[in-house]
Length: 213
Length: 186
Image 1 (cartoon, each protein chain N blue to C red):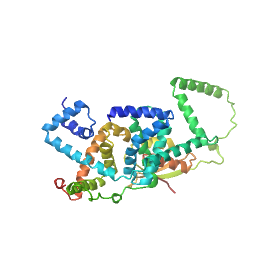
Image 2: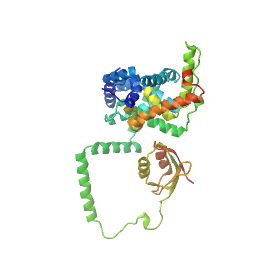
Image 3: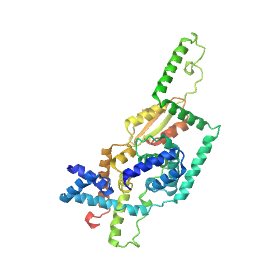
């Protein structure tokens, strides 16, 4: 099979790594014999590849045994914590595992949805006419606070990623972008600032997040 | 080892890890720890931080082995975990890469001074690359990954990876120029 010049060029790194199939390699080598530009490009890439043994030599690799022993200690510690009966995080993880296991089957998921629908209809049908409860927004004291956060997103964060992150936090952009890429976002759902900041900083789409005072 | 055989072996090992097999976990760790540490160190540029993150990566592998659905290769799955944890660590530690963190390669003991000089120049030039460009060259030439494998880890398209590899090479050429060396002089 013959490949065009652009495809052959793209094959160079894979050729160096031995990641081409037999037929691709044969076609590449045939093209190489008659294409000095491809040959030149290959030699430049080979020069880069040849740097790696030296780069590797400079990496201070730690003792494999010591790191493995740290990993096992870390796993033990986490498993002990998980086995602790009163760990709320553990209960949550178990609940998540249970939900995952349960809803993995579409049939069960539909059955649960059907039960929920029946319950909903029953509850709405039997609700008293008089309202004997008060919503937070119906007056009196409210615990709702507004949290504003200065935020800079990563350059490669896509709009859909940012939107999904903000939706997850029920947050909205209220200012920005400024010349330095800064946005201000606002949350109104009685947020715990530490949790919100942790979620933001843990996101791969956020470069910087700090409360706006 | 043929990559297809390696992929099948890693998958089998991870299946055993999911069943709680410590020996399989050790084997998987031994087969990947060096490349994962190299990767983490090149991103974090800090010995102890790279080690801490490596501990966390393999802890996650142990805990998450049962959730692996085989939609990607085991290797790219583990690199994905490593990348996420490294990025989190970078943000937390605000540890910025500094060209001065790199030592020059000493000429002493090199059999051929001309070769040593050439490599020194090229490596200096490589240190001048952006993290993104250096990263993609590492994936290709150290980790020996295909464009698709890199795309899976970075969650970008295969075409973007291809473009980035060639931009990285062009940037390297530019960096060599900045060092005041013509290509045919090195």
